[in-house]
Length: 114
Ligand code: 5GP
Ligand code: ZN
Image 1 (spheres, helix red, strand yellow):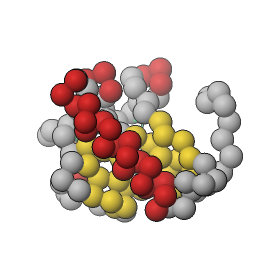
Image 2: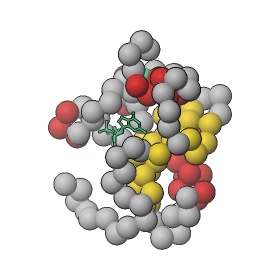
Image 3: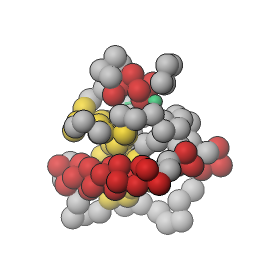
């Protein structure tokens, strides 16, 4: 989608530290990391938020979760612990309207989240 920064990263038109890529998604480092490990997993398909994901995206969503787990493993936080977060719409703090999974780890986290 024109003007979407995550579509640009997926297309290689905007620099990012890429951890993983395949034909359906990419994982890369968040440029304002909130934890020692902070990756974002995004579909190549532009979906604005989880609200816009339909039943036809169910398999893709499963794949994104699987890549999130793989990323946690590759970044070395799968045993200590990690959190996967999808912020959806303003009250949840969504700022980029291209669906993304945050993968956070490498420190102790609070619950409930702020
Ligand atoms: P949200 O607030 O929408 O859940 O998360 C958006 C995330 O994208 C934020 O953690 C923010 O730091 C990250 N982000 C925003 N713009 C860029 C960018 O251009 N490059 C990278 N690597 N991360 C970005
Ligand atoms: Zn996009």
